[in-house]
Length: 112
Length: 112
Image (cartoon, rainbow over all chains, first blue to last red; front, top):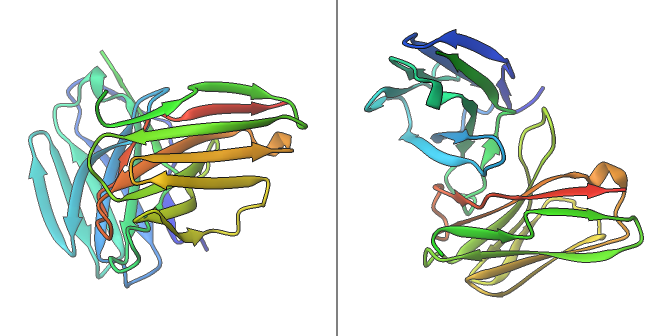
């Protein structure tokens, strides 16, 4: 079983839709959870960072962590064509010198 | 230059060649990372340098040889690679022990 599972997609939605991206994980000791966005031919950029369970909102983006279910989500409201990218979830135990475990990424396409 | 830069952006090499990838960070960080990103697979952590000391080597074949001469520069020396080593090689940096990593744009490597 992979440590982090993420549906690779591709996921295609119309502009303005609410997008839900998800990851599940197997190691209950993960404490820190991140979402990265990667545009084509670019490196990943950090989008959201959360610690332990709960929600975090930043503009149109909301990150949600449910540690009891070992499930994290990223919601994008009012999606725009500029949101078209691959979204990577990542997580960490927090005590291993910044070692991150990544999901394989979900490819999102927002159609005008 | 700002952030994390990588050169070259694209590299094609034969199996008997020797080449090097270069990474430079302008963020004042003291930890640097090499990742391999293959299609439809999660990012694979290859090497971690913290305060210029290698602290992680994820069972990477010896045909990949990292070098970190100072906290701003990281190299990946390549020799006698295999076609399955073709991938996007990403460099990242962070403050030591901090989960938030900042990535460069990557080097797209093709081994013929």
